[in-house]
Length: 366
Image (cartoon, rainbow, N blue to C red; front, top):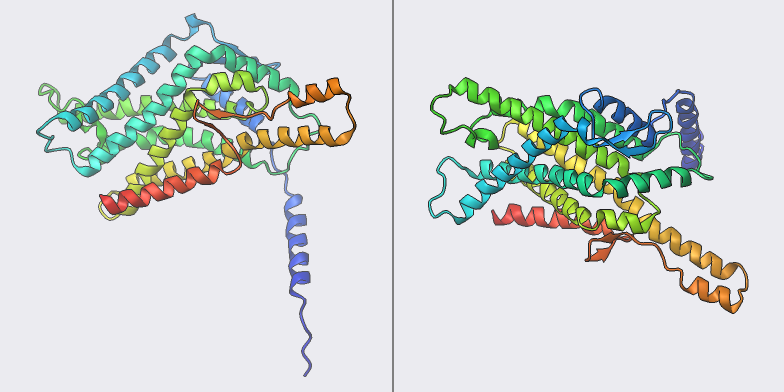
């Protein structure tokens, strides 16, 4: 009996070729970030007008007239008041000598997590209100600049991420509204209406579920809409840095805080928490990591590509003194994290490693 030597690399290449050719025959619907933005716009405008209106023919953004934003302002004010109530509860427990006996470590962790999540939406709301012209200006200009020589990918990972955010937006409100009913004692809304003696317990739970549903629904509209438009913000640095000067550091800090709290719940309190809460914490962690992995490379790619372009110009041909001075004045484009630093190639790993480090520190210390 003779044994033939098997070329493993050749077998692997043949297998990869067969799998690739098989999946290439399967029709995949268009799932680019632009398609996600269009589908999100059509879905959200079924309920009430949003702060940004997209023209259905040209798909260019325009600020929505104030007279059509009554419901948007009402829900936004309601969400801001909710965030302030969480903040006041946290501040009260820090400054008060006698702590609330019904506030356990689990309930306090959830209050902090809900405050961080609501603060992300509040930051987005104020960005829409005060920077709407800059946002529309950037998106309109980038619409004319993108896709020149850009090859359309068969599987767009950023597009898949944005479509998954739409799915989360649809599923999250009904799931989150079940929390006050299934686990009232550890839910942050337990402290709402707690001292209202004239209300029955069933009425209190119903109001808490209704409020959470509305807040999650409206907050999801604003946050997901902001992330879907984020893909458009790549080149116009002056307006982009002006737009994100204060909002971007707050968003990143709150995403960091949400990932930290949910990671602590998954690691340290997995044995005592209900399955629904663990699933929600896992979704928050996965969403935060996915958003960081999608957005940070896009922002880090801008200074890298602009620097490569400047190097190419310098090496391409000889310049006169005037052209050399002009070229010397061209600096690499950068996205600044407020007034602290600019985002670069290693920013994503620094952010993720900080989440891992401080989660481990919190688990060990508490």
